[in-house]
Image (tube, rainbow, N blue to C red):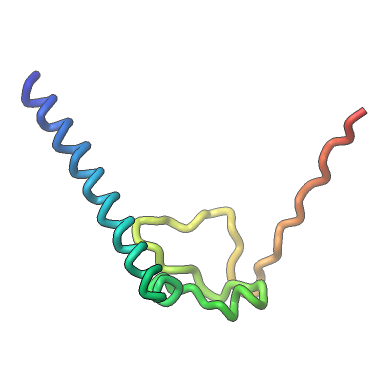
Length: 84
């Protein structure tokens, strides 16, 4: 039982350390002005409203329900229900 608790604490500590490291990397990129470049985000794509390629964000999987590329269409929100 003590081994399980120790291993569990180690796992939590390891996950916390990895999260802190990734946050520090993002903050470093942000503070040096390299966040968009290092993430592969193209400002011109954002201005046009069309994504030509997905950003390179470590440990983040792209959503399967998002259309990309030239065929991407912005989603139109469904109308809000009428209140009586």
